[in-house]
Length: 153
Image (cartoon, rainbow, N blue to C red; front, side, top):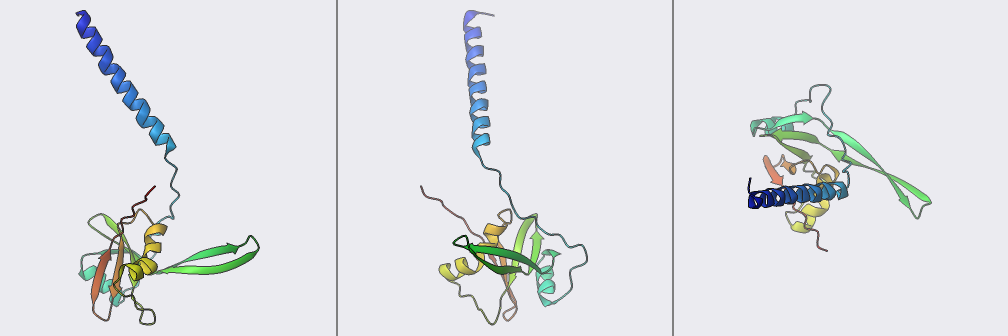
């Protein structure tokens, strides 16, 4: 081996080790995500018109309705309780979705603000999902809604 070959070899090894060290340090700085587990149905999902519409559109319904309890503390003294209702979890082509059924008492307008206020919480609660399916049984339509959050510093 000539002296030029040794220099190039050492340079390549140095670059690879530096790159691996940088990637490892960046990986250490990423916080561990603590996500809510996706509940899978222990028993068959009850068949209803929403499940039939989803299955007719090619979705596989993984679990039925569930309730997520929320404890809220105000000024470190006052405790409030609430809950968040999820209708279903469904998947299609290895993509997972939270399913929210339209309510006649609380209709959602298709504006950015209304969609954000109504559905973004589900995407934030389950960030590993690929979006939210909004099922409107009056129109027999499924709307797939995805969110891209841009954090500006």
